[in-house]
Length: 411
Image (cartoon, rainbow, N blue to C red; front, side, top):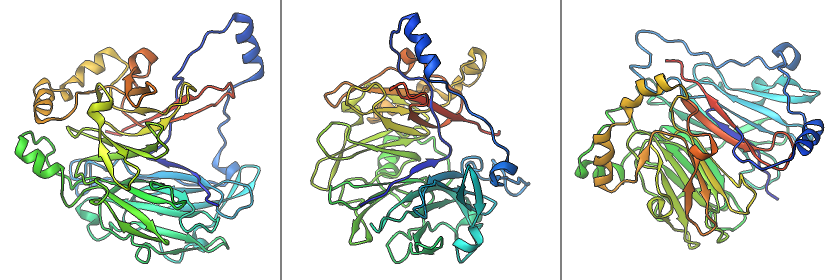
């Protein structure tokens, strides 16, 4: 039996994404029964003393490393099967931390005991809690990235649960030791064989992204040393099947979402790409291969795509997709930043064969036939500033999913 846990990469999020009509009497009844409210607990109360503190210098800053503010992450899951969810925090210039839930929202830092080496090496960019080996105990996958300062510290970690609150690092033994600049990752069963396969999102080495000639795009974006990786789980060892599955792309990826987008019983893949690189929608053929169909299934997408979530937000039985961009709700600020949405670059990308990409969040409503209608502006969620990660969830238990969106970029 497989166990899964919520994974949060670069933050999490939600905001009301669906609406219905209620009478004033019904609304009053709902408000009386379902009260949404959160209480901020101090670290003294919880025992959680983690801060992903960044220290900039003349040698290490945004101009030297453009991803300096886009690391970190947190995963929540029950690592010791006691019915209480534990927390793993990812650090960039500080050590990762694993907190054991003692009950009543009190946590204990067990990092020194749980791992046999320091967790402050390299630039950590995401974490997943998932049962990799099928023993009903959650394991931990940590992605690593970084600049030229971290060239020898890019190998991702896979911590296998020893079932005694300790973990053994086995990325090499299980085939997950590729040295790329990983941004996020998602485990899922792509071939319905009841084990978990893995899609790893990587970003390219920092360089000028504004390359617009057709020849350079085709040469650089369809293959390259920084491409995303796809692994098939074969008896507990992960085999690189990126090319065999038709998933070879070398783009500026940020996140990946998984779900059966066309209701054929097989999981599909949505990849968010930044800068001029288009989002990708890989449809599962059911034969261990995928086909890319973003243009055939959507009318347009976000341009500077960050995080995404795949969920049925309107309860019609079909999965929808929300993707975040970076447009301010403030009219003046949105105009100041509109330079990023270059008309010349827009049409150059279309001429090359890329999709229509606009600098707004996108909410792709599944039409029920495998195609999508983009309704972010109608739903009121198209402009949420420099957003990172969204997450659909029903906060008030009214049967409708709400949408929380995380924001923030220091400079």
